[in-house]
Each structure stands twice: as structure tokens, then as C-alpha cells.
Length: 316
Image 1 (cartoon, helix red, strand yellow):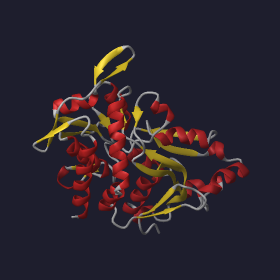
Image 2: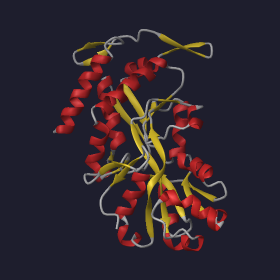
Image 3: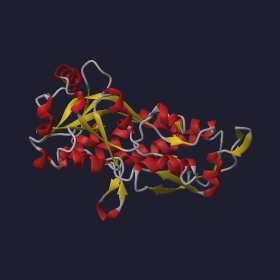
Image 4: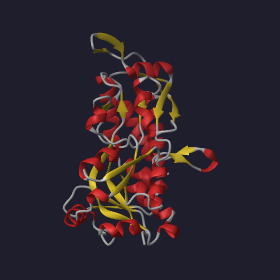
């Protein structure tokens, strides 16, 4: 009930904010965008106008990234990003079309080709991606964490570590970084971060999160670098077999920020999405949605850092 009330309040606020662009009629958004944008010498209709005219918002989501986008009961796609996408479509007065490719790395090409209108997929805001797409302000703050395979890490002298801040110095002291194997997912921000933080390590890329985490669980990699919530949730669900073999190191080694991605060159559309994001955060709705899927979750701030640490319950 609280979730519904917050969503309804947000929709009313958001609709009021976009009144300068649209006139409301019978509860739906109608009218004409008040301008055009110029991109490389050509004039195009605002993306917002096209979406409203079509009556559909096409949102690209992560194919499998629990709790942000995954298949739930009844084969229905659910998750935090799906809830946010539904709220955005409702505020715009259009239908939602969720598009989930078979691989995360296909999302930006789909956006650039015009197959989707926005990406809402737990996508990290990075400099390299910003060369291709525009990002809104962050709608969610998280961190990149490390999942360790204890057995395979013993010979590197890092198996006893529980604090991620001691990892780099221990590898350096033992001169074993060049033996380190790190699993990452193709197209995800941790793939670049792994190279930056561990330049001598062997980075092993996998097509999906599941393949990367499974390879780590089997000891094919010493570590997996990925989103903290994903790693801790996977550990929770597999702790009967993961216990004593795997562990997540706290705190996260780097802050991470998720943004909504859109095509470059449409200032009106970007501005409106930023208003949406600011209202979303001001009302605490992202953590509200997250709590629906992770009811035991608590959030703290790591010592000496602004990176949030997500406690999902029993990690022993």
C-alpha cells in the first residue's frame, strides 16, 4: 500500500512538472513538444514527442540481474528496474514495452539503432559509455565488490583476507598479482575497472554474470568483480555449497552509479528524465522497490568512504 501511495504521489508530481511541455486531457498526456533539437546540422523531433505520439515507451533492461531485472514466478519479468520503468511510462501516459536482449552488451547498440528508447538496466555511468550515449543523473548508488574463491586464492597468499582494502598491498608484497585470475562480464563496467585496479592480473571475460560467477565458484578464477548486491544475493542463494569455499570481501573497492541511458542530442528529453530521477530519489522509491525484493536488506556507509555497503542478511 505504501509503495502504491508513493508511486501515485510521484506520478502526480511528475505530471505537474511536465505541464510546460504538455497539456493534460482526461488524465492522459496530449499536446506538442515546444521545440526541436539540432544534432550535427539536422533538425529532429524530440524523442519525447515521438514516444508520446507512438503511445509506447520501449525500455531496454538487463536480461538477468537480480533484483533489478529477472524472471520471477509465472515467467514474468520483474525487478527494481522494471518497477521504475513502469512508473516512468505511467507518468508519461504511455504503455511500457520491456525489451530484454540475450546479452547485456547488446543494449547500447540497440539504443543507437533506435530499437529501444532508453536503457534502464543497472548500467554504470562510465566515461567510455558516455562517448556513445547520454546518461541521466544516477538513480542508484552502489559499489563494485569482489567474490573470492578461497581455495584457489590460497597459493596467492590472499585467502585469509576479509577486508578488500588489504588485497592490493598483499598481492604486491607477495609478488603474486601476475598469477591472479579475475572473472568479469563482457560489456560491464567491472571489466574495465579490473584492468585499472589490477593491471598485472589475468582478466577472464564471460558473456553473462551467471557464467562468470559459476567459473569463480568452480575455482577457474580467484575473484569475480561485479556489483555488490548481485554477488551477495548469489552467495545467499548458494550458501550451502558456497560456504567456506567462497566469500564476498567488504567494503566495495569502488563506488558505482546507475543511470538511465538515452541517445545523445535531445536536451528536452534528458532534462525531463533528470526531473524524474530527482523525484524518484527524493521520495526514496528506489530503495523502496529494492526492499520489495530484499526485505532483510540494510544499508550502511563503509568506514572512511561514501560507498554504501548493502547487508542482505546472513553471509556466514
